[in-house]
Length: 221
Image (cartoon, rainbow, N blue to C red):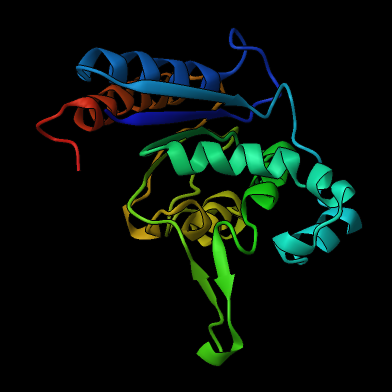
């Protein structure tokens, strides 16, 4: 039975958030296609994870057997978020573009999940690549919205796209091969013209297509 982890990072409520509408559409379609499935919902937009601070770093780099009670408390939120990622087979991420990058709440979530001893190991005997992810085999679907347009590779604003490369760079902490990330983006949101309507329609159709594919027992990877 597959487990879907739904992450919403928009600061807006669903009636005003296109990414929340897409993650809701994806979840409904996935559940309709799957004979049986579990869904974990994590709303970092409404309930942002804590930012990493010196206490977190101290605790994370202390071996578990040596941790003091305050260290366990400092890592408690991180442990809950990591457990959700470990349990998931598929991650659907509602990630709007804020100022050309990811929302701070989503970055805080990634920082809590990317943790030595839980989602990656670190060994200097590996030379210049000491970090090795410990999770694998998961699928990531990013559902995004952008006020402008042309952020795709080769697009007129590709050089301003700090969102997609950041997610891809951190995907290995989630057990995701960056080459398999599916990104669906609504563009032209600030223009509110026919191009926006067409982009919205195409994103919805592609979201349904991908959700059905991942939810279908015959097509599931």
